[in-house]
Length: 297
Image 1 (spheres, rainbow, N blue to C red):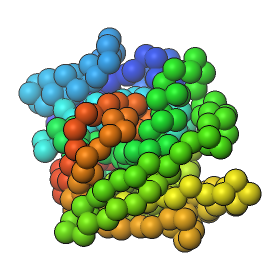
Image 2 (cartoon, rainbow, N blue to C red):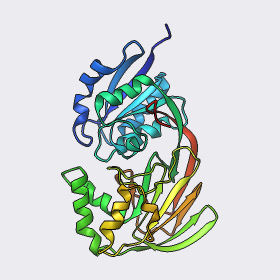
Image 3 (spheres, rainbow, N blue to C red):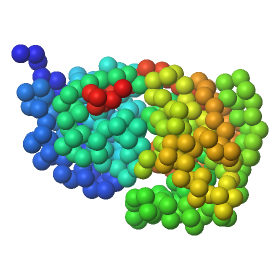
Image 4 (cartoon, one colour):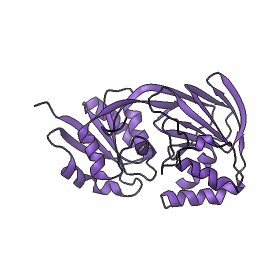
């Protein structure tokens, strides 16, 4: 019989919707113990999962599993990128954007079954200056709402959407100068997204053509939409046709620079961060090994 693989589950105890509290019992019940030995580590402070993941690589774990939302996922990815260690996700956040793109089930038992099947593919990641992320980053209104959402005491789509409705009518689009590969663009935009996966989360698909392993990021430049048309355009996200809107310009690129960036605020997979310099995005091809459902193409 082949040697068992070693798994480390990294759990964010305060992530998203509280699902992570049930994980220990579900692992005992559903994880295939004939294939795997496992340990559990709980994060104790912001970005602790990066240090735990790095340590897991050093200690020879075969698989690291993020139990949390997109922020927890990115923390783990930063410790694993470029290594041979396989990465898996048990979605326990609010939006779960990367998990949804990968078709990883949102139910604990089914997500654990994906790990049992142990089918691995290699995907790209994106580097923003010195920060690696797996799914999507945004500037403009997107980042402004992420900053407001970080101050909220309640999570979930309703809280997020309430902030959008509250601030959208009064938000003034900003001017941006971008270099998309070798193409220079000056534009005003409500927001601009830089996508590896296709969505923000909640199945709100901003980059329908995005692929995790094509060596490109997808850039969506979104103009401010008149209020009377905003509900219809927003619906295109959920029908995976947002790129067809006349208010959206889409590009694919390996590198993007945002010059003379004055906003400072970035939405990095739901996490509000600040960068006080020009933004440099670059694709890191085939840099992360990810476990996905066996029936996903």
